[in-house]
Amino acid sequence: MAEMQVKDSGGGKGKPKKMSTRVDLTPMVDLGFLLITFFMLTTTLSKPQIMALVMPDKDVKLPDLEPVKESKVLTLLLGPNDKVYWYEGITDAKLDSTDYSAEGLRKVILNKMDKVKTQHGMEDYKDVKTQEDRKGSFINVIIKPTKESRYKNLVDALDEMAITHVRYYVILDVSELEEKFIKNPAGGLNFTPEDQVDASTTK
Amino acid sequence: MPKVKPHRKAPSIDMTAMCDVAFLLLTFFMLTAKAKPMELVQVDTPSSISETKLPDVGTLTILVGKDGKVFLDMAGSHTRRELIEQMNTQYPMSLTEKEMVQFANSGAFGVPRNRLKSWLDVEPSQRDKFVSPGIPTDTIDNQLAPWIHNARLAQFKMKQEGKVKEEYVIVVKADQDTPYKAIQDVINTLTDINVNKFNLITSMEGDPNKAGAMGAPPK
Image (tube, rainbow over the protein chains, first blue to last red):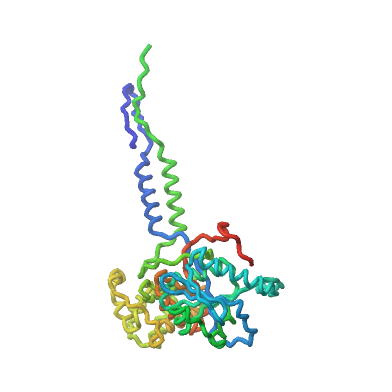
């Protein structure tokens, strides 16, 4: 909206003509907003989010730790087509499948937590940061992504660990036995204890 | 009584204030924003509830595309220069001085060593037409491991020389549809060279614990 200059009709003869000192700023505003739009579209304001992942050291042999109780272990097999197969313990394991929704995997983990809590009660542990003695109930989750799963499945599973506050979890490779197990759940899983011996010692 | 003359001046709005606001915003955006880095691969990261932000230090980014192709990118031209010199002595690629400068100033790359020379010879503006096969990560010919290992060494050296402040933070940026096999190869590569702590880039997702959608599980 440019300001229209209207001629002064009743101007006196000898009077010097009054010139308006106002500058029309509309194009400048246009330019300003154009540049703002440009910068908003070409730049990133937020820093990306990260999820820290710590893998066990391959070289360091851990000292003999007390083996984890079988009843506390929950194994998740991340299968194809966004399906997650899971079983508890090792002996007579029954395979079940679910999805990554709040009603699926999260329920499975929370159920397992409740089960372990009623069965084993609270245990003592030392808080890593503050060195305080505390009490808590823990489950051990083993995450095993199969070759057919996608990256999102792994992140979803890790996310679920964060949401449900699982303290001990580890990412391992799927064994042949388990792959067979997925294909034929009725056949059952006949693990020797050695098959999973390194499963629970690391976070 | 004379008739009241209609005001003949056209309505005008004082644009000064608006102009001030526009340029204030413009200054703000220019100072706070960072240029969007050019991406070799389109990566659509999965979402997670994690709220940790990427620290403002030098990062070594491993990009994994939807098709499992692995790319590598690192910050700092000093380190890149040092790295390419190291790599050129360890694995002769007969790179010229010009090509090494070119490497120090470019971004992510995803070519095997034997094709790095031809990739560097392509004009940076023409690089998007160059089909990158990805850095081999399989166990037979793992080229990712020496790259990362030497990059960390180079960064460490630069830190000692005072050219950079921090050591590299290792970041894995993968597409949500990347097959796990590719991720597994990358993770195995990293743990093989004793990089046991790394970060996965994710996008924002609401935390159900905070939203109160579900009872907070026992701690």
